Amino acid sequence: MLKLFNTLTGRKDVFEPIEPNKVRMYVCGVTVYDYCHIGHARSALVFDVMRRYLEYSGYHVEFVKNFTDVDDKIIKRAHEQGVACEAVTQKFIQAYHDDMGKLGVRQASIEPKATEHMAEIIELTRTLLKKGLAYQVDGDVYFDVAKYPEYGRLSKRRLDDLQAGARVDVDERKHHPMDFALWKSAKTGEPSWPSPWGPGRPGWHIECSAMSIKHLGETFDIHGGGMDLIFPHHENEIAQSCGATGKEFARYWIHNGFVQINKEKMSKSLGNFFTIREIFEQSEWSEEVTGEILRYFLLSTHYHGPLDFSDQALAEAKSALNGFYDLFGRLAEPGGNAMPDQGLDRSIDRCRATFRAAMDDDLNTPAAIAALQVLRSDANKLFGNDLSTKERQRVREKFQSLGNSLGLFQMDLDKKWQFKKEIVGSGTLQAGAATMTGIGTVFTPLSDALIETKVTERNEARRNKDFIQADEIRKYLADHGIIIEDKPDGTSRWKR
RNA sequence: GGCGCCGUACCCAAGUGGUAAGGGAGCAGUCUGCAAAACUGCGAUGCAGCGGUUCGAACCCGCUCGGCGCCUCCA
Image (tube, rainbow, N blue to C red; front, top):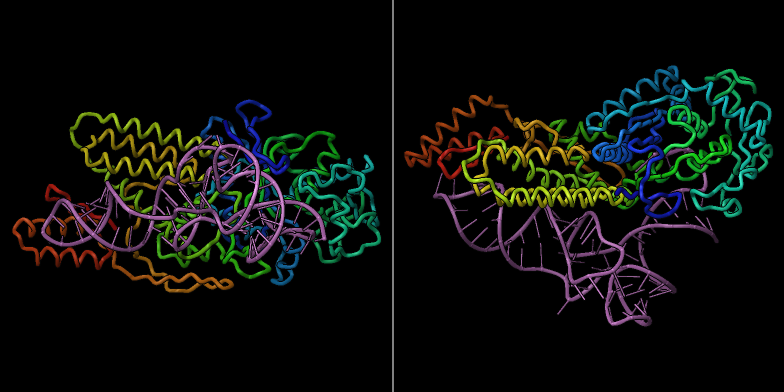
């Protein structure tokens, strides 16, 4: 039984979708005017994991994630670079897919763009006007927050409180300072669309209402995004949507915590952010390995809390993953002929049960990972017990199937994991007070065949007690990024 | 000013009333020609501090200290 922390109710609610076996979820994507940073990665990952776990739990998930492709910042960026807005948005949508793809974030079922939903946006705005919940001033249309009595129910704020401290630009044309734009009249040099109120473009909040209603219906199950979207973005979405339809909008509101640098929120304005691509570029590991390290790191804290990003944290994630991949490598070797081990079944069952209990409890990924760690430990103990080939495969498959909800352990076993650094990462990334340093060594990659030959040679030498020769060969391989491990039977395994 | 979050070992991090998961790092040992991996053992008599409720609290209540977020675009 899955429970999710619902911002709307302020507690963990038992998740019950409107339609049995089907989940409809909407997540606020990004405004495409720049590269994504780790904070964006975390949000995308959290909801990717939610989707994966819902699927694992047997639901069919209809997952909508939008791109905001009309916005002040996009216009500004386009002007700065002397290009069309579409050039900017296209570029960064592509970049988004590239970056998130490297992280193993699956694309949503539908990824709508604001610019492609003008008809729906205008229609929704028209409805709100007709219902008296919005008003027109010149070519602008504003939502009238005072007309929506439940305004503030998500963020637990009262309009009076907001007024007290907010430094609001006094716009005399607005009825209430918190009224927000549904439609903005066009200024020269800005992209615009025709509307009943003259040429203009939509305000930020209305697009999500229009797109979610169109693709998921007036009431759907889950709406998610970063904590910072609770107010005003999601509050406004609720006001618009409920105001227009008279129905409940989304039933479960899920918000992820921030990524921080030295305990401070990572943000564009503070300048203390790392982009996803910077991290990949500076990484000492291959793209696949880096993706998994990042993923493991981002899931090692519960999604609701803050998460401090650091070089050391990534290194710890890498070390933890080494343990798993080391085991996977050994599990891929042919096994012995011992009798089936009863303990294995118990361990696997226990892991699955613990894992599911953790994930069911508001997607407690750190606890879920801990369950996998326990299985790793159990498997290592049983390994010395001469597990059969079939049993080894079974363990490996269990890691793969449970890990799939987290997007972990999906990598091919064929030596894709890197135990030793082989990629140059000689730069230093600086963001605020934090740094990421990459000091890599370049190895000339050796072919598998050559490695095998060397390993055979070395074992020949070892049989002849020529340990000087054996150690020389090991040194040679080590200098090329190859680690040798001797097995009890006189043969050796190697890994990069 | 309003609303809210957080403070668990050297580091990361679960646990939200029943006697402190897990990982990383470290130390010691087993195994090994050496090594690596793996395994075993060690590690918070205590969960920011002080009171209170309770048979029992890291978990509930109150106060204090410290850190942070939102209220303005922001994942």
